[in-house]
Length: 152
Image (tube, rainbow, N blue to C red; front, side):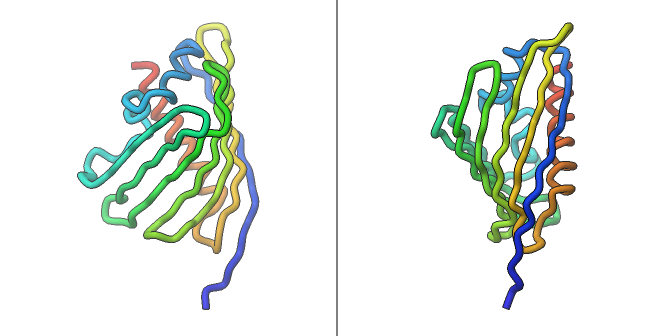
């Protein structure tokens, strides 16, 4: 029998981008824009990504890590204030096993020369299959990709 466990943890990541708050927000709100930095690996021909960026709307991302497991990300948007914030809940699966359930928030504010984004995630990491540190590292890498897109 598999030993069950849950570890609760959170992290906050801050980034400043040389783009307006409206442009940063738009990078989250449009599937075409979000696919440039969050979407599936272009080398995964079976990957799927859908986005309905509305309160109650869903985002789904499914695919396979090269030479690794399959993954699934399923989110529901709980709160959206255009150009200022979004709050969503989501779960992650690897090879069909749920590894975590989280609540995430982005807050966007204007700063001289651009926008400041603060992302906070509160997670329940399940059965030792994922950790807060791993999630924070992966999220930081994704936000770095967003930065690359916004500075291009």
